[in-house]
Amino acid sequence: MDTQTLFSVKDKVVVVTGGGTGIGLMISTGFVKNGAKVYITSRKAKVLENTARELTSMGPGQCIPLSCDLQEYSQTEKLAQKLAELEPNGINVLINNSGATWGTDDLESYPDKAWTKLLTLNVQRVFTLTQLLLPLLEKKARKDSPSNVINIGSIDGLGVPTLIVPAYAASKAAVHHLTRVLAAHLGPRDITVNAIAPGPFQSNMMKATLENLHDVIVSRVPMGRIGSPEDMAASCIFLASRGGAYVNGVVITVDGGSILGNRPYTASL
Image (tube, rainbow, N blue to C red):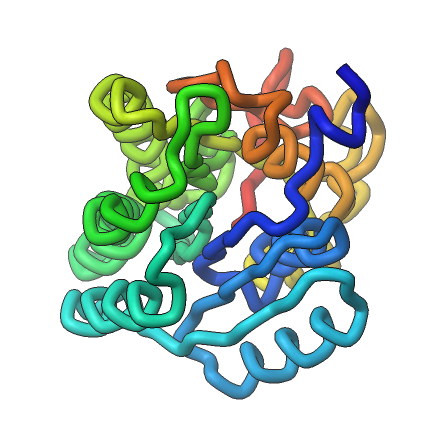
């Protein structure tokens, strides 16, 4: 019952898509600092290499970069094959964090191609990568120590965003429901599937918005601040630890209460 056992992720093997920047970096940092072996992926190879080098130097865990453009199915397959080669004994945690957004000034100008891009990356690839990595997740899965899939959704998938981002909001709502569907099917295989719906966090996606509208955004958060790296990392560590072993099929809102009483201003990955 001690906290060091209940919430330990030491020696776990973790995969974080989009793990080189933003919320993905917050998550990756939390796991590496607590002794996990973390594979980070994105299409930006140089950014990944720099991030992996920096996190590994911090220790005590290890960070390994694997470049992959998840928009491309063939590259997603290659990523799964590479992980199978590197980790033949399996992985403990998959964190589906990679995503994109697309906004316009009015509904009339919203492009059809935004739907194809966002639904492919934000929803379809969450399923694709989970599907491809099931053999590795099952190798580590135990009744009292399940493997874990954690999908990063958004409060924009729970409420109506002020910004005109219909494909993004719809894709995140889909991620939340896909999480429940997968949880029902994978729970019997000792794999939990949960989602986190972040509110405003400092990320590349929110950088310009926060620079221009920081005070407005903070005013809509009952806690009076934007999220910190610790807030995001702790949520994932909980779900990946013994403490979260009986949590399955839920969407945890990590937004300082933004969703309460006011429409959320925006969300980030």
